[in-house]
Image 1 (tube, one colour):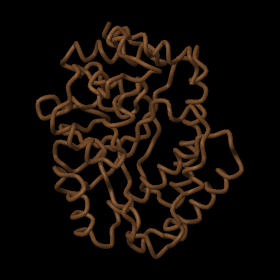
Image 2 (tube, helix red, strand yellow):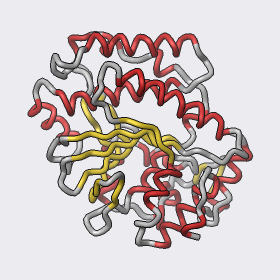
Image 3 (spheres, rainbow, N blue to C red):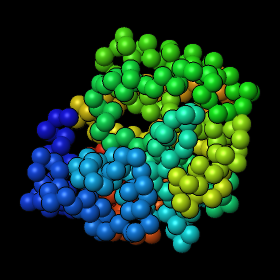
Image 4 (cartoon, rainbow, N blue to C red):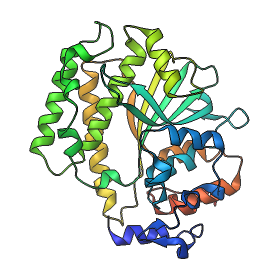
Length: 309
């Protein structure tokens, strides 16, 4: 990242400049990266349960993707529902684990899951703040061999595992040939895709439900509908990171297009935090939170924030 973008991001009036060192909050205090400097115990437990151990590491960076997602979505509840694309959501979970392939302790780690008021729909978000600004393929190239073994998949025969493996091979080869793109993000999407297929087409629904419940206290029932969105922070065009974000957006769109050819029911898309803000700003009841999101993040994003200023 350029110092121009990081300096602008750190210039928020909600950041105590003396608490920063190399764009990280000092004294092991992630709460300085949280609206109101406090996270409720329920949400702390979710992050502590996640595989990334975010609060102990990455959450201290001013450009923390998990804290960006938390600050945008933590307020959703029964008393403060969020309507998005004609569905009302009244519960939010962070760092949600969904099983992928058999004989593997690893799982897909979903940054945010919104649950609809009738419990039938999950809206999943994979959040990217600055990760997608940097070309990287190492995680993709080191993808577990289990994803290339059709016997390791857990979903029904109506989903052709061999076609999934063919898709993975195509993107694996692209990552090997191309060093200019963020293919590690595609690796994550592959894991998330397999997790979604497990939710929608599992050979043993009770087993998947049991695993999901065990991994994520509070998530009791599997959804009837799964919606998935890659959500990107897209800086203003005055920062060169804007163009890296646009490039990754196109890469994700290409991946989803190739995936729908073999899995037509996939409901996935790429959006930006700017677009979420368009839907969210009129629904936020807390003006202090709106001010915080604008000054802390959206001030540097490619968006018009005048509606709440």
